[in-house]
Length: 217
Image (cartoon, rainbow, N blue to C red; front, side, top):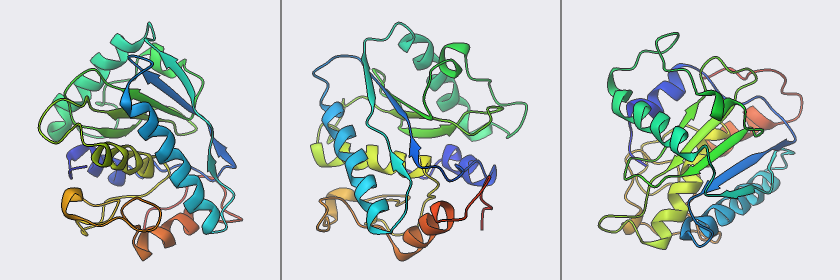
């Protein structure tokens, strides 16, 4: 959940989702026992509760889970390519095009539980309309990375980007950048809190009467 060039590109490109009743999710997992599956379901439920509490109609759909997908390796390579080029990657035609194996998947949000130890990120697929999102959740190797609370917050944070939220400067908020989740207290939802700005942005993007691509403010 670090501030990266990837997150900045998400903001600068203005590639935010248009209002819709439900966002379909495809969840690709390396194994059926991957602990990040439970974290992903919890994060999706969290966002649906938040959207309902705000009186919004948008929801994240129940994910279609595919284990050991034959396209996972291609998607892993694409994710690695994005990650390695992030800090020098210009927006526009220079961005690497998503592979056919990704764009052919039938989902608004494709979540890959990566086998690789790369940073987690949300990437608006370039030259794809309407906007669709590729979400990478890093492997759970390394110090503190197998902490269940950290994992579920990483997934929720990245899904927050996929529904239009950007980073804020509160290290103890869900959409933090940079973040300090291990020293933060969760709220009644069991997740780090949203800021008032986050809530207002969700209403702006997903409230009644919103049509087309929202304007970044």
